[in-house]
Image (cartoon, rainbow, N blue to C red; front, side, top):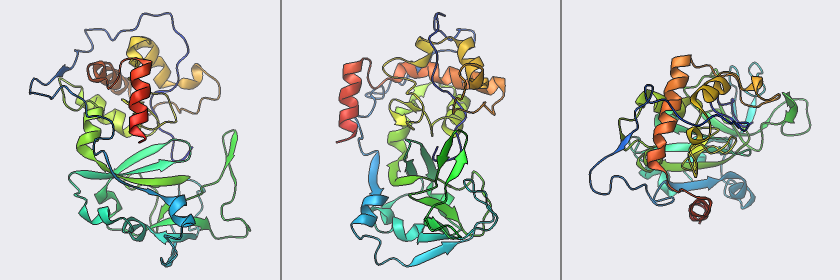
Length: 304
């Protein structure tokens, strides 16, 4: 897993329970009446302003003129070493290789970090300011290989090919610390918001905020988000084939349903989980595709 595990929904076992969020708990969101407000943006309509494929850039010599940089975090989330020395390139120097970087507006754009396993996490431009980030390509030490192998659960992993660390800082959730990083995208907040249903009236805003914080890095809705866990809105919304009670129990502790689940028990309180479920149910009113063929076409367009 590329970064700290997300803590929301995971794959579901078949259920015979009729799907529904009870009307006493959730009112359906309504689409704004303004002309064209009910339409979801077409695939990738200016969502990704620019994308930096880190491995390709290094292989083609884009990094050759950059100075080697070192960082000594007080702690890091992958190796959990005290003051380990990481070697790589300054994050700002990497970002500046794209002409688009200087044009980004902090109120309208964000950074999305994409990892090997499909994990995606989004941070504001402000999150990288006021500190020195290094896009590490190796950790210094006794090992002859760039990245020592570390046991994580049942798997053995390394932090490579790239690991974003912060000099003289302790890991927290205020800054991005993605490991197994492969791409950095500059994205339009407005385009992402529409696919996450922000344009809907009566949307459970608390549930939306919780989903973005705890779930979106691993799960997608309207094909927006991480790919580590399943898509939750198209072509069928998760609440159309899983009951409210089932989802509540599963999110609380996935390991009660399937052994070895990579999805951790949720850190959320029960009322917060209910808000997330309400939000997900409301997204039925904002699907970008409603059958397998449409979704296949939509995905093809996303990758053009």
